[in-house]
Image (cartoon, rainbow, N blue to C red):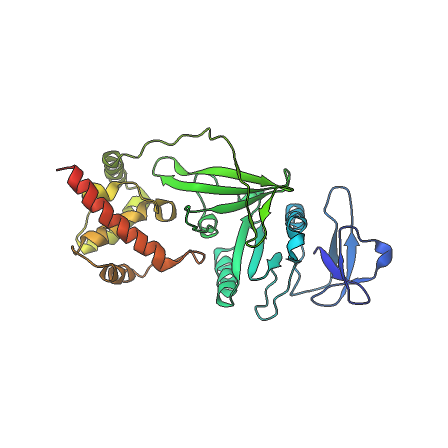
Length: 332
């Protein structure tokens, strides 16, 4: 932890604290803690080895401590609170500003735990802002957790990363998925000391790094041929989709051409976007509400608590309408 209480119950920050000013106490369990300082590790307070504190967990990585300190120094002019304990939630975000709960995730986390923490924040009026550390950086194939940490502002999907070595926040944006290349995105970086928008706790200045990676063009005919080949080769991801549509008298390799066009939401669902499009086809013309009913009958789980489920699904439905009309018209 980066803060503790002194004998007068005053909050003391680990950075700059002196051991002679102790003893220090945990803000959660009130037991005595030790001030640890060194050249290779961020100054912090730690419990005695035998202490079992339910509020302040031990075992924080060097990166996690540094990331919290970096963000605290970055936004301290806004009266951001470090390691704020929210008793009504029984949760302690790394930082808290008004109703924004900042969570820096530098090590693996069970997805069920992520859903629990995020849902609790949202149910109590807090907006969680998940920032991923180095070990959690997504590669070509993103984990479900990385996707679920994304937000969806007007500019498209966005994911935040922390780079403590360069003292920077990194924003992944223009995120899209290609069936051969995986997930592709652009990066923007803001370093400590650059301007920020105080009222929203979001960086104002974003310097785009040069893009050296160019994606392969998405061609609907090529994707359909790819699906046919993978279905014959019994690729699990395609077989799973076929097993869903087959009882509904569908074949994932015999859909109209527009169904194989690129989707803005392929990033979230990848090949499963074909299921949404098949359900749109199954009863044309179909209303959005009718389409939702058919979708719910599949008993699938929404895994993206930071995203408005109805808004995303409505946009997928509208995308189906647009592609059906535009591709059908152009092929005549």
